[in-house]
Amino acid sequence: MVVNIFDPHRIEIMSKKRLLRWFFDNFPYKAENFSGIPFDKFPEDEDFAALFADLASLSLLMLDKNEENEEIRKIKSRFQDLIPFKECNEATFAELDKYDFSTMFFPIETGADPEWGICVRSSNGGTFFFDSIGCVWKCEWSGTGDDDSYQLAKSLAGRLLDSEKREHLYEAAKNWIVTGKVDKKEKVGKVGLENKLQLPTKRKFILPEANHDELPEADRIGKAIKFADTVEAAWNHITNQGTKNIPEASFPPETDELHVLVGGNIKAQVASIIFSNPKKVFLWYSESVKDSQKPAEYIEYAVKRYMKEFNKPVIEKIEKNLLSSKSMAEAEKTLKEHFDGVRQNRSVIFNVTSGNRIMSYAVQTIARAYRNIELVYRDIDEPEDAEKYFFTRLIYNEFPPYSGKIWGKANERISMEFLCGKEKYENGQNFYDQLIKKEG
Image (cartoon, rainbow, N blue to C red):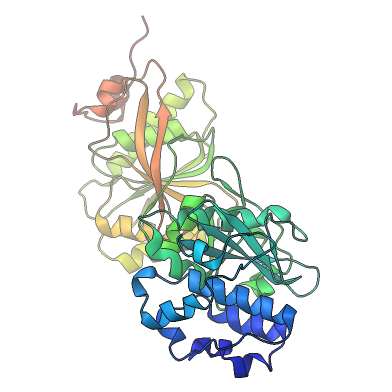
């Protein structure tokens, strides 16, 4: 039975350090875990008794009130006049028990063995912390090392108190430990990791996305680690919810590589190239369509002419390659051979608007394996806009993936009516003649 560490006979032979280790390894608890625990007396040592009372109080306050039974109510009655967490609180246990409580763990770098902190929040607006280094409660966090790294834990603990999200209270405290700075827009910022991941725990870590590339491989072994660049992304890891939203954005000023699945209609394919200003373009055509190389040739013609006429940077390379549309394994192998030779710090956009499902699924597999690849596709239901040409954006460097909108702003001479419409074209030259409005 988990909570037998609260048994008075067992508690007398425990040290503070051992009590904390056992308690937080198993925290939080279910009502059933308290079955048979008498709480007849507190430890005789006054300092130890205070810690015991605080930990027991926190455990009881964290219980789902819908799980309460007669035995739990009897235990709570023995605590009702006690004032827990005295460094940060003046209310009795009975007063505190009127509210809901949430907790989130965060690691602390100490320069020696790592320790942990816990952020506690209540639905009456209270926030306080437990610091395992000094075994003390704090109204405001002031630890060692990177003092702001507690902020992600505080933000997530606050979310857990939302009436629609309380179902995740237990899961969040039981299985996660998080670190990250948080700004006013809820962006998660980089922190000093030092030896934080050496903390002995079975909990899963959430780290800032900005810390990903600096994390040594040795620190990943045997640990479940997720990354997040926003509080929303961290929240989705904890709740195992679907695709994480990212704000609408414009194409970057330039892109190292732009990859395109080539299909019969090349409008979205050409648009992604002229809006992303790539240094290199790779056109992937299939073997399943008669004369499948012709659309790729039309794209190359239109793009080269556009770059020259509008004085855009010359594309270093436009390469046309065959990609299987019949065998996913073969398509994945082809793409892997290409991306194994690409530096991970290069920006890569892959337009999957065209191609069949086998081809697009193969690209998704590759996007999950290579963190620097973003996917875009043009939906047939995208809204028409006089200036902006929209794509859906997917980033698979975490799962569930991120999703949002990305757009390119058209030159005033580009015919948005043609790009967004159903007008047909005969070849690359005819396509370009309809795409660009004549001067004057």
